[in-house]
Amino acid sequence: MRRYIIYVLILLLSILIVILWWPVVDSQCNSEAFLKSKRQKLQIPASQVVVQPWRGEHHVYGIFMVPDEYKEAPFFVLTVLGAGNYCSRPFGYSQNYDAVFAQPGTHLIRYYLRTRIALRLIVQGSYFQLNDQKNWRLIYPEVR
Image (tube, rainbow, N blue to C red; front, side, top):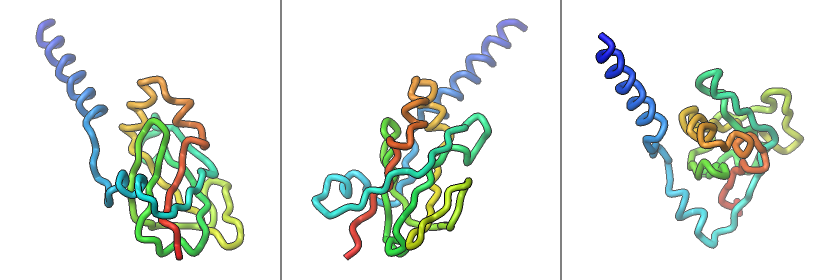
């Protein structure tokens, strides 16, 4: 019986390690090529960051105030120091999130970081780095 419990615990620990460290590639564009290009870019710092992965899914995100002319941008890249770069298409904007209100001529985008990535960074000791809003940026291709 004791040997059975040890095997089950080893199996559960192995599954947890695989889930936390398995790379997730669900980017919608080539962010590395875009960031290395000489193309003009608009960098937008986070207005607010929420890092509470222990509350479950959708509790690790940044809120960004984006000029209205970027609503129709083809894509943007989220960069989080230590977590990497994530490319996505703009969707779901609002005028207020979590007591952050958009200024005239802007809208807010809330972009989520995967919970497992946040948990991995916290286990590695990067909670304060992840929780610092200066480390979160949205990068858009410059509108002409």
